Amino acid sequence: MVKRKGLPEWGEFVLATVERITPYAAWCRLEEYPGIEGMIHVSEVSGKWVHDIRDFVKIKKQYVTKVIKIDYQKNTVNLSLKRVNKEEEKAKMNLFRKEQRAEKILELAAKELGKNLDQAYEEVGFLLHEKFGELYVAMDEFRKSPDIFEKKGIPAKWIDVLSDVLEKNLQEREFILKADLEISSCAGDGIETIKKILADFQKSCGCTVKYISAPIYRVEMKTKDPKSGEKKLRESLEVALKEIKKFEGEGNYKLIK
Image (tube, rainbow, N blue to C red; front, side, top):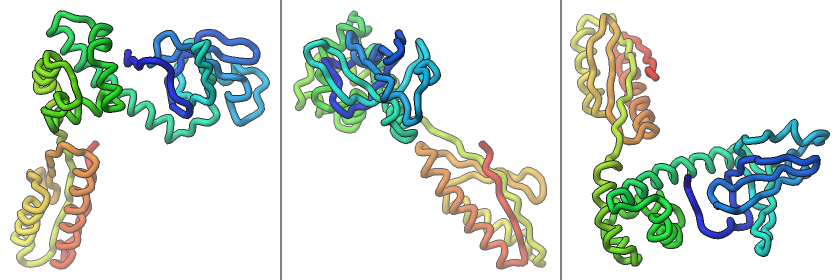
């Protein structure tokens, strides 16, 4: 489990698992902060009228919450559910998943050194948090600039093993985007026109085009960024459709998910 040292900050979004419920509060375990207890008061559960707190929170269920008060002497924090919107909840879960992947890299590096994850955090994990804010940010920066860990004072033995583990496990994933393109032309030289349009299309987006059956073609595009890749693919397909209309033709396409 992703771990952080000390207490969370005011206004921070944290993952909280409900462990017990009283009539006026839900008491939670903070997943990223071992030993720290959080409390969601009934007034912070929902913007609606709360008749029974159990209608809004459940035992053992995990929630994205916001820190609204910190008791440094008791090592407890007050949390809010109602002050977290859908976008903030999604952003926190995405961040947490990135941290989990980065933590796995740290755990693999620890095994190479004959250590466990707790030892890895004590020796280098918390230091990476301190220097970079997030584990995944540290790993990403290290992958881009291998000398940055040395500049930040990360122990040499950890630099070497993390470099090896990252090389093996953080190779950029390649995605294949697919679409079916239907294109035809009534012009006398329609076939040659379609061939030229498809050739230009392949060149513009770096795609491959395979003939399925008249008038359908399968388009495939490799990318390491599916979001920007899909945008580029759509734009290229739209250009091809505009071109065929100039030659007594028509067409449409459908992305294959």
